[in-house]
Image 1 (cartoon, each protein chain N blue to C red):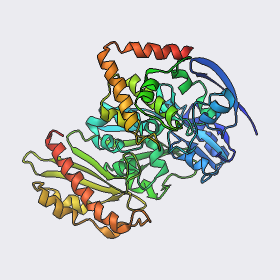
Image 2 (image 1 turned 30 degrees about the vertical axis):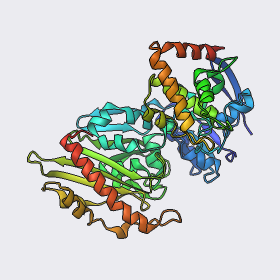
Image 3 (image 1 turned 90 degrees about the vertical axis):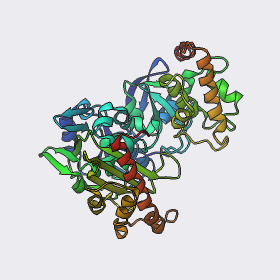
Image 4 (image 1 turned 45 degrees about the horizontal axis):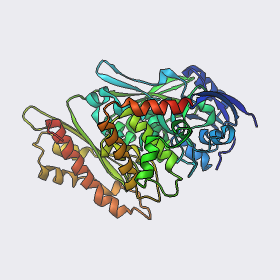
Length: 291
Length: 174
């Protein structure tokens, strides 16, 4: 099995990569970790005329704190982010999400920005960034623009990235005091999720819920945020009964995926269950309860 | 078709190969360097048979292009096997029925090699995580996990973990 032929470029700077992307035209693709694109090449689901490899551009990798924000270079390896104490302390939902992404060899090569740009509907990283209301930095020869997560992922394998643009950085507000959880159901650990739930929760001093966020992934072309569920928890003591009641507000009509092996009815059944588990685990982690 | 010259280090030796950009690293290692220990199964990143170590990290050899390996340090199953006999990991797989047809074995050996390089005394959970990306259709995995546990156990009883590592390093440069 061999991909169709293509030209290959390995620029050393972002500027050079943007120049090549502009001159090679719309049939060129950038390659990040290659853990999704190379299979698509091998299966000839993608047939780019040229690959522009971002792996030799050091400025695109790394995680740093800038004031109260965390900036993640798009070429940061998933394994690096998973092992990062900064991520665990300041945006733990990404840590818990990454535990479910692939396997050690795919995480060692796969990148944060590559997963977001590929936009698989089951991608945990997309759900995590939506839950954090992250901002995506896109660069092109025309300049830079910043797109919020809810406007970045547009559908299955579809994003707001325009011709000539490269996702260079993801910016997230640091949330050190929160409890977070990402719970998913898959046939084997590391497989694509049948449904996933990502939750964030901050508790006030009196123990009530100060803020909550819930995203469900892998059930529709893009991850879905359920603010009504979060609103039902805010200002109240988060009991198991309250969470069960709140996940009843999930609009199951927004679930779309219906496959031969995983039916829509099944996804509608497990979505609220996973949401309940994620919210309760986020609550327990916000309280600092031992795992 | 334009060929690209790629210079890299494989199992401690500096080598060069002329590859088409579309050729996978695993395919290039097999075809150009004759290192057929790296097996190609699914060739699209699912089975893990082609797992190798690139710059100290495990990688699916079919999901890297040969051209991407310019300047890289690559370790294959040939590099962790002694010229005669078996490495401790291979010996344990043999002892514990950790293989039958053997197709997945090179990938398993490399995944376990990386585990023991980074985690000298791994738990069962860490062993299972380390091989989670490797498919085996013969053993049911239990023999592989038992083999890895035996290697870990042996290392615990010989607190000088460097014993095994040095042996493996000598294999590498052999």
